[in-house]
Length: 513
Image (cartoon, rainbow, N blue to C red; front, side, top):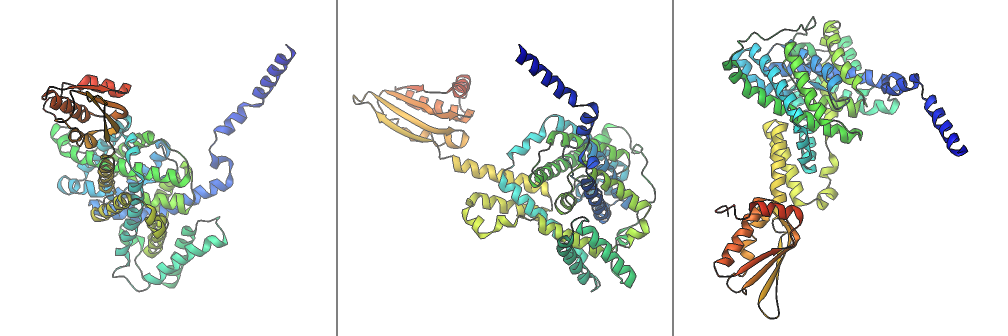
């Protein structure tokens, strides 16, 4: 009794020790209680904001809209997704993939129809997220993921090539100097992100020395005021819906795929989990808000996410939120200064991101010797398709389908059949081992001696599993062939799921084989 009372006292004391203030501290984000984390997140947000500006302007040009439309989209996407998204530290903004999807709609029908499509795409993403589309990510194999990452690195580098073509000679030493700063500066200190140091130093050098090179301002005019909410000026009719729906659906799918793949990549880099369902719904909410504020829509930005997570070391939602806030502050309050940033500085940052993103281990000779040929081929196909189409989503789909075909071909021959005849010759037992599905069951029918077998045939499936209707149809075909010769077939050893499927479908699939 005394022991029980002592235990109760200890429990009550430990409970009392957790004060409301302590509980509140436990709910605080890391950056509120840790100055080092706070500094990292703030500086990372600033670097990303600087890198977002020329990218957003470039994507606006691709979509055929005013640069402010892309910049507003980057601002609203980053701010909203930092609150409602499922992956901390991931950057969402206006992207090239979305720009390519909506460009034809804008060219043919105008900006208002584009904005209406963005809002509808957001609603579709919310619906798909609620339906659990994020669970499909489990079917993306590692070979496709590696191919996706490597293709991404190649695309990031290729996007910088135009900035190095037909430019003043001074651009090249500036790029080399920027790369050197980003390699060497972290050896001095990691308190300030090397990309930020590189951007500041190169800007000061070009402005002070009066070096004439392409700048951010050459990409387009920066907005001078915040976006205001409003509805797109389109007729709310069925004709409008049928016009924008195909573009909205394509945008929703491309945006979700890129965002979920990026989230998975950040999961691996940071060794932390994320909610893909929340991210899917969050992308939709962010696009709906972006549409109402006159933005061109967007999704996760892989290059900027790599700057934030891999180069700058950010890990919280604060960096994503501040990337959007700093973007608008830089454009509105410091537009003239930002306009003077040489493009060479941002090109150097993106080249460094490209180098850091590429999975060099995946192409090392030692790795290639050990990897199955099918996985190497799948990785290569993913890279080729992504680079050829300039579309990460298409590459992932083609790579995943290729992986499934390779897998099906590999396991199609894993169903083995061995026959044992009773000493008296009256019965033959066929033992089937392996997985029976559409690929392996096609060969099953040809592995029985219909003419030479005795009157009774036993098919033992205790070491097999029936996965689909094709396998049931194959077993029905075997029974039919024996019945035509006056012989009986007994199927034994079915496990419960196989017996249930076989019981439901046997005899109901006439003509399917």
